[in-house]
Length: 253
Image 1 (cartoon, rainbow, N blue to C red):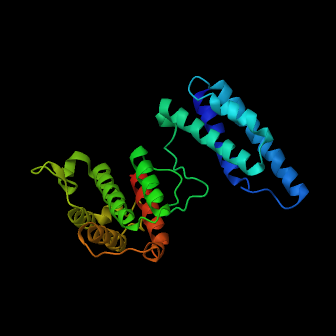
Image 2: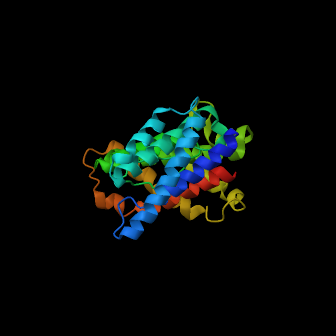
């Protein structure tokens, strides 16, 4: 077995495990069908973990083996945790196989629902945003949303224009990245270059992103600012759309 083949098997097992109901079915037949599927996935996970014990923490195998006496909901949690940590083990040794996965507690209230990111920086940043959102810390949520959008714009410009037009994203005289407002102005001036990548990436999108720049600025500098759950949730669908669009553009350059 090769690492690439087994990583694909692991990815498929994770996808199937995530599709399992998180609570026990209502009818006996429904539950037996789910139990059968769970047991198959558990065996697949245990086989992979045992075979790749040199890079996957073997304790996940024992957790799965010892979980048979637990209730259904607990067994699902243990299965998913074992699969996710096994995936992390593969990526630490073979980072070219995939991108880091956003992992959240099953009971966590999430603002940004996305399964993968371009790199671990965004993985950690989005996890931090979701943790703050789950704990009703809405002002720092706005600050980190600003940081998320700003860094995505920097990476898009940097990947598209590299060193040939570094001034679009980097101020060489000051030795620092351009301010967020300048980044958006520069992106707006170049927006036609992105039509072949994604026609939905246009000046209207830049205008919508600028809203989060201004909100982040207000959250950082105003002593009387108040951000409520409704303020965030009213923009939740848009935030997810913008993040996914920016990441799609970044990945496709």
